[in-house]
Amino acid sequence: MTEIRLSGLIAPSFRRLHKELKAEKFDEIWLKGGRGSTKSTFVSIQIILGLLKDSEANAVVTRRYQNELRDTVYGQFEWTIAKMGLGNYFKFQVAPMQIIYIPTGQKIVFKAADNPLKMKSINLGRGYIKYAWFEEVDQFA
Image 1 (cartoon, rainbow, N blue to C red):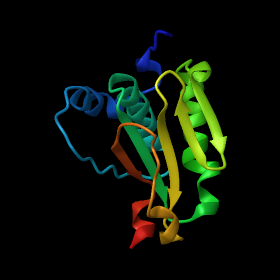
Image 2 (image 1 turned 135 degrees about the vertical axis):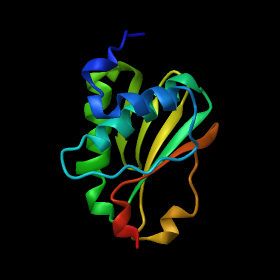
Image 3 (image 1 turned 60 degrees about the horizontal axis):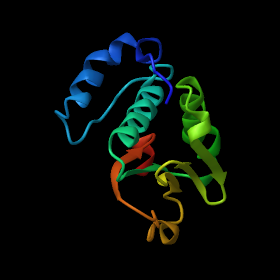
């Protein structure tokens, strides 16, 4: 596996939180910040690291509207995985929209909240949902 240097990927403003998450000090985090604050980059890195650490972990990433998934959070994971040098270990699918960690079959599943019927069942194949990311959570109100 590729050696990952996180110091070049994680913004200084998130390094302390990264250490706290690595020590498993939190079950839940809420990140606030404006455009360009690197929140999405940080969250995607943490989810990838979490999947690598726990072979039963999976993630569900949600946005309010389906048409926003591919160019935002899905694209963020494409970028993150490439920057981490892990592209050969992941399979990217758009129908259904998911990213699969090839060695274990773990998934990052992308869902939209604009059609609740499509949210009812998520087939992971193995493991459990350890990470749930609600991007632009203010849009869910």
